[in-house]
Amino acid sequence: MPPEKKISTPSCNSIKATMPSRTQFQYISHRPACPELKGFLPLKIDSRQLADLGLDYEITPEVASQLVIGSEWFTKLYENNNLTAGDHYQESLTDINQALEIHNYTGLCPTNVLEVSPSVGSCAVACQYCLVTDGNHVKPITVFTNYAERLANSLEHNRLKPLFYYFSPKTEAFSEPHLFNGIAHDILRTFVRHFEKYPDSPVRIFIATKAGPKHLQVTHKGDSLFSLMSQIASKIQLNGSIGIMPRYLREVLEPNAASIGERLDTLVQCRELGLFAESVLCQPLMLPYLTDENIDQYMSLLASAGVRNIKPEFLTTEIRNLVLLANYINYFDPELIGEFFHPYLSYKNQNHIKQRSRLAPERSVCVEYLEKIRNSTEKYGITISICNWVKQELSTNAEWVRHIDQASAANGYRCLGYQTGLFPEKNGTL
Image: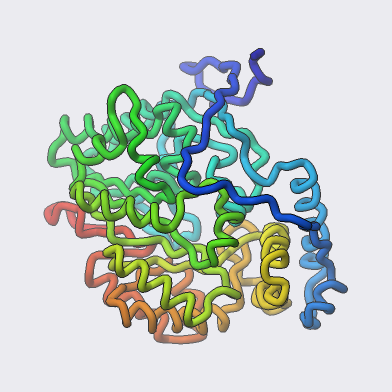
């Protein structure tokens, strides 16, 4: 196959631009592929449609415009079969001397968390609510084959600092391109070599994943991810990523993710290896589905798998991505589409922006559902850690939110659920 068009590479004299080639991969079989949505037709959302849904409050001209743009965007993606990433990736180089990015979306995040992101573009998991791509999986997946060298340089520079390396906030750490390219294994090997050289290094690894055991069993040069992580188990925190939504919607919104059962199995098996793996990123919280029954079933399932802490976060996304998600909700549960839109689109809510143009739901609605979640977690002995930005935004409506993470913090969790107890005491914590 001839090489594709050249992609841009970092401006660095030590790197030569390369001609990327497409590398095919097969998705790891973990559950039946999502069936086609028979009779599905894209929605056209505008001010008139909102009125028909009973949403007769005032919306800004900008919101009205974005709804129309979102409808046209989704229709184009749907008609061109571009709603998920393809089964291929490209390879390129990164500047190995460039510092890793600090993980700080809101200005209120811990500043000593560095991002480990070995690829750019789309993600093979193709979550339709993705906080990074906002549901846009058209861009090619580009894997940096020399990323481990960049990581090694960062570790050498920060070898005396108690900080987390977050693998990965901008893509699935154990997606198929990372597995079959071998970069996921090389990243873990880099950490192994670092701790062999500096046994007392205070740096730690934070992994967030939707992967199942089959992903972590993939071998590269004779090593599985399980075997590599087991060598530095005490240095790793691995969190599952599981939102609250019905299975039929999950299989559409997370088309290439492992099932909930498989994700929880990953946590169990990682704990057996000695990793700290008892926390879950509970996101996104899809408002129409946060019934008392669904929340209780969710918490019961987590508790049965040994989960002791969650970090809940309501869906935050740009308006055009709300339209994309609404199309799926309308297909399965048309009576819920008005309830889905309502907390986001009102005039008074347009200042509830987490980052970029990502809207969060109305503060009062978030407080209402967060209280339901708190009541359920207390029932199952699960604590809550929470984003500092969310806590700041919601505590103006309910003072108790400011202290919702008190028990979690006492157990060492901070913000995203970082377990500060992993750091050596002599180096302090986050």
